Amino acid sequence: MEKKSANRRDFLKLAATGAPVAAVAAVTGGSAQAVEIEENSESYRETEHVRKYLESARF
Amino acid sequence: MSQLAEDANRAVAEEDLLRADLYDLISALLAGPPSRDLLHRVSRLSGDDSDLGRAVIAMARVAKATTPKSAESEFNRLFIGLGRGELLPYASYYMTGFLNEKPLALLRNDMTRLGIERAENVYEPEDNIASLAEMMAGLIRGRFEAPSDLDTQKAFYNTHVGPWAGHFFTDLEGAQGSILYAPVGAIGRVFMEIEREAFRLSS
Image 1: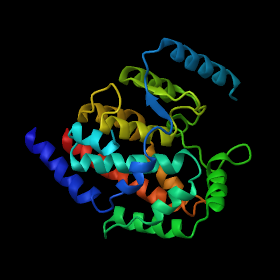
Image 2: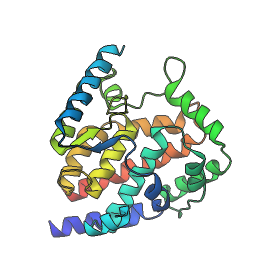
Image 3: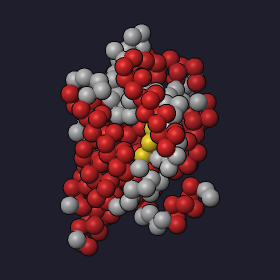
Image 4: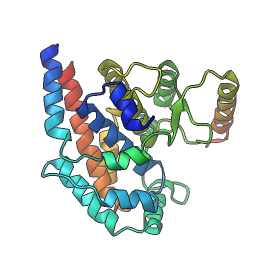
């Protein structure tokens, strides 16, 4: 298991470090579409309601 | 707390942060037409001689010559169109041939289980590529209630991303309307190959 996760890390270091894109992602990443779920059940119901409406309105 | 500080607190490994950054970049570029600011940032990226590095260099070069206006019309041609765009970037469409099919229902179940909710002002089905990339980045960074461990990421990837995203990025790379988005497609295609292999090595 330890060896396998080391393999994976080594592979990723080789394959994915050739083009760091952090400068872009740090500014633009996250929050575009998905958000953390909230405990507030009001907003959940509303989202579900809107979702149902949109589903029914779709072709 | 800044994103970087949050990441550091969670002790996400460096190579996983690179993955999250790539997912966030893909999400930012596919969620909507890129702003002038985003184009500018993209135009300053560089890479090495790897497949991924070369694709990023190509994207930076095109971004430098792209105006926000032309990027917007390219985005609209590809994804919005008159009636529909050239491509339909949805898991359900790629996996079943139809929109809003079972893959979307499965995704919604998993989102609920993992504590991910759609933002209220978003009207697009959640199985679009930009949202899925954002969810992958969020899982890696530990943004959601769900544990950010590799098994969770792998299960989510294998169910919702792996089966189709590579095909979509290949289509994007070769789409008639793709100029800026051709190298974006190449980046996605190469990255999905890397992800598949990395998850395979972890099993």
